[in-house]
Amino acid sequence: MNTPKNPTPAAPADEAVKPANFLRNVIERDLEAGTYAHRQWGGGAGDAAFHAAGTPDTARVRLRFPPEPNGYLHVGHAKSICLNFGLARDYGGVCHLRFDDTNPEKEDQEYVDGIKENVRWLGFDWVTPSGDHLFYASDYFDFMYRAAEALVEAGLAYVDEQSAEQIRAHRGDFNTPGTDSPFRHRAPAENLARLREMRDGRHADGAMILRAKIDMASPNINLRDPALYRIRRAHHHNTGDRWCIYPMYTFAHPIEDALERITHSICTLEFEDQRPFYDWLLERLVELGLLAHPLPRQYEFARLNLTYVVTSKRKLRQLLEDGHVTGWDDPRMPTLVGMRRRGYTAGALQLMAERTGATKNNTWIDYAWLDIALRDDLEDKAARAMAVLDPIPLKLTNWADVFGSDAHREPCGAPAHPHHPEMGQRAFVLGPAVWIERDDFLELPVKGYQRLFPGNKVRLKYGVIVECTGCEKDADGQVTAVLATVVPDTKSGTPGADAVKVKGTITWVSAHDGVPVTLNLYDRLFAVPQPGATDAPLAAELNPSSWRVTQGYVEPSAGRLAAETRVQFERHGYFVTDRVAHQLDEPVFNRITTLKDSWGK
Ligand code: ATP
Ligand code: MG
Image (tube, rainbow, N blue to C red; front, side, top):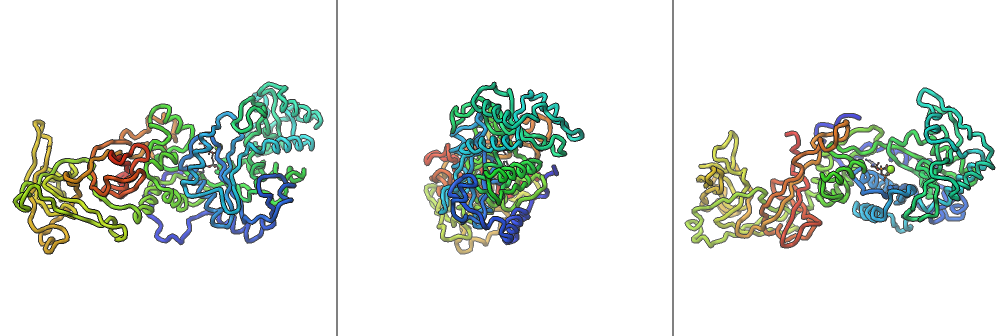
C-alpha cells in the first residue's frame, strides 16, 4: 500500500475532465466491438435454454452489486454501488442488486432490508422501466447443484474424502506443485453417487468435499482443484433446511453472474487470482450446454481505502461490541447508516466515488476527498445561519442610552444564502444580551488577534459595531461575561454604517430570540491515517476526542427545523439535525464537517 495521498486534493476545476476509470474504456471497447450485442434475455435469471427462449436484451450492458447480507454497508460499498449503478446508467445498461446469500450462517433479513434502503438512499434503483432487477443467489442452488453433477459426469469434478488438513498439505505452495489426492482418479459414476449422498445428508459435515479437477501443478494455486461444495448442516434464511451442502463462493459467483447474463462483473483486486477459475468454470458449463456465450467477464479494481477509516465489517463489529461507538448508525461510523446520520449526502458520496475513479493501484484516498465533495454538494443547497457553539454572554452596557430602552429590540436580517436570493431572508433581533463564542474574547490579545479585547472594536455580523470595555470574572478568575458598548449609527445596511472601520467581524446569537440547542461536534474516529495497518489493537488507534457535546444557541431560522435538515453555520461548518435524537422543540445538531480542512494545521 502506498502512503496517503497528500497534500489535500483540490476539487477538480472542470467536471468534464473524467477521472481515470479504466472500466469505462473496457465497456466502450466492448460496445464498439459489439461483444454483447446479440444476447438474448429471458426476463430473469436462468440457464442457456431459458435465455435462448427470450428476446434480444435491451440492456446494452448488465452489471451487478452483489453484497453478502451479513452486515451493514460501509463507504467502500458505496463506492462499488456508485461504480456499478453509475456505469449501467451511463452506458444504457442495467445494474442488478443481487444478494449473495449462499453462505447460510451469517445472513439475516435485517441486513437485506438495510442494504435495499442504502442503495435507494444513494440515489439508485434496481427497478427500472425494463423490470425489477433484484436477485438472490440462493435462488440458484438448484442450478448450481445441476452444474456440479454435470461437471462430475464429465470427469471435471470429484468427491475428495481427505481431511481438510490433508487437502491443505497436498496443495503445495508457491514453489512446490501440489500432489494428487488418492480420490482424484475415481470414476465419474462413483463420484456422482458420492455427491448425491452428500446432498442427501448421508455424510457428516466436513467428511468430504466436491472439488474441480483441473491441475494440481498449476502455478496458480486457485486452479489446484478448488473446492466447489461442502457439507454444512445449517438453516438458510431463504431455503430453510432444504440443503445440507452449500456451494463455495468461488463456484457460486461466476454462475450467479452467468445466469443473470451479467456482461461486466466488477470486483476488488483480491479476486484477480480467481479470474482463471471464473473463466474455466463458465467455459466448461458452456461446453456442457448449461450456459451460453457471450459469458460475463470479471474485472478487478482497487478497493476504496479512506484514511482514518476502517472498512472491514469484522473491525466495525468489533468497535461496536467493545463499546467504542453507540451503534451501527453512530455518526462516526463509516457505515452508510452512520454517515447518513452524520449528515453526509448521497450526492457527496457519488461525487467522491466519481472523482476517485477506478484504478488498479491499492492506495489510500485522503478523507479530505469526502469532505470536499460534501462541501461542493452543500455549498449551493444549505441555508446559512448563525450559531454559537461555546457560548459566553456579551453585555451591551449602553444599549438603553443608544436605543432608548433595554426593552428595545433591533430587527436584523440576512439572506438565507448569499448567492441564492430565491431561498429567502432570515430575520432575528439584536438586544442588550448577546451570545458570542468564548474564544472571540481575549483579555490579553495575542499578536494578530482582531476580535474582542478591551479597547478593540468589532462588528457583530449583520448588526452593529461594538467596542469592548472589559469583562466579568468569577472567584477563580474565569471570564463569565464580556462587556462592550454599542457604537451608534453603525447598523449594517444603514447609511454611514461603514464610517467606522473595524478589522474583525464576529458571529453571534441574540439571547432574546436565540434557540438553545445540543450540538454533537464529531471528529475522526481514528487518530492514525491507516488504522488497522499494524498489529496495534484498534482501540489504541482511536481519536480520544472524536465526539464532544456542547450546549449552544442558534438563530431562530435554525431553531425549528425538521429532522435531517442541513445548514451551514457561518464560520463553523455544515451541520445536520440528527435523524434520531432531534425534536422540533429540542433541537440536536451534528457537525458534518468544518468549512475548511483544518487537519494537520
Ligand atoms: P467485508 O470483507 O468487510 O465483509 P465484503 O467486501 O466481503 O466486506 P460484500 O458484501 O461481499 O462485502 O461486498 C459487496 C461488494 O462491495 C463486493 O463487490 C465488494 O467488492 C464491494 N466492496 C466491498 N468493500 C469495498 C471497498 N472498500 N471498496 C470498493 N468496493 C468494495
Ligand atoms: Mg465478501
